[in-house]
Length: 379
Ligand code: PLP
Image (tube, rainbow, N blue to C red):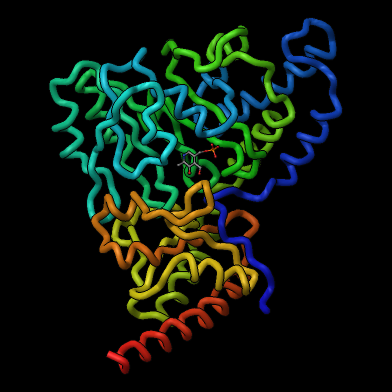
């Protein structure tokens, strides 16, 4: 068996050493950030330093960062009828956006066959509406396709609406600037950039009032009650700082590895389809591919038996494989969509892991083609 390879970074990224060190130090400090004594002030300092680092990563002001328990909660906090008359969300959003937060219904904004939000449809959908709240992700978690967020912001703002951007899959992989994107609200999650699971943030445009989901305390300027998870927040801050360092070099390195991986997929299976590859705007470390006749459940297990962790493009939180709403929105033929495998890399992925993937893929593809041949003979 080849060396084990963790290639499921879009599900969660391994903890960065900087985050681990910051969390360990924070766990050893006793104070509650709301206490006025020295220990409390020390804990407050850890939270505020992390807030500064996260704000710096996305070009926002620290005072506009609201800590949450993760991306899911940040999305739920953002999507409130207190700031919008109706909710529209792209058809490829994460389920935590598609659930609609505190809205009772969500209207879909369609995407093109390449997985890009259809801006013409968006303009049509928001025209004449009373204060539309629109949610469009920065980059899709399955395909990696980067969305035309700044253009969408112009359309939404000219219709008098607000734009929420789920940027969970962006920072540390591509530049992500809150103001340049034109976002009014932006969701981040610590564990996608090498921080701990269970920490996230909602960034808000200055002065935008949020309707808290969790009430009963004045923490986070009244936007989210409850004693802050100091250690997780400290880890989030350290991960954000590390993720912002040498981004351009990292992007070039990941792109080269990803391209090598995709060339390897195609070399063995010339009929492999790489979803979203035609857009020219994908995360540098995400590949979603399928081959006719492949079944994602069996492929993920086959990779796992070879020590290679990948995911089915349509994996859901219960561990079962459901049809991908992303590929369905892109009008991908259902049989092909059923075989979609997502391979995602990160800052510590190296050529050895890509090689392990190639070996496992060669083995899997061979059995796939053998099975196909038998089927053809039997037919
Ligand atoms: N949004 C996107 C695009 C995601 O990929 C995820 C996680 O997979 C989330 C939101 C949810 O984030 P969290 O796991 O921090 O709740």
